[in-house]
Length: 87
Image (cartoon, rainbow, N blue to C red; front, side, top):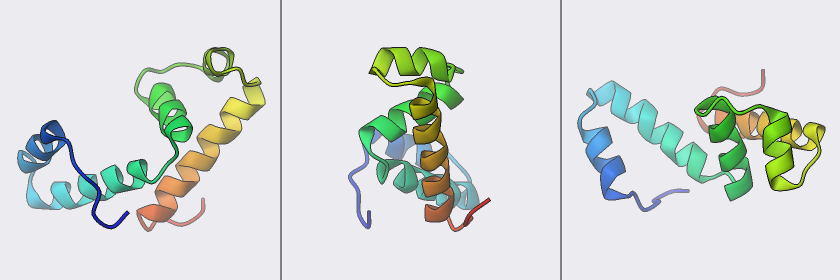
């Protein structure tokens, strides 16, 4: 996404960071916005809320492996988007 809309809270958060951190976090924000809603939900729920794949799979009507696969693909997309390439 070249010019995604930012919510006011995100703009305020970015403005309070040092310039180099703003660049990295803005790139991360754009990378996250490029994910599908499901990918973003699984990635953030697993990382930030520490929810396991079994719980996420049950909530979303997926199998354990399906939730895990979506998570790992989302991580790869974010890395590529931020210039990190494959791991």
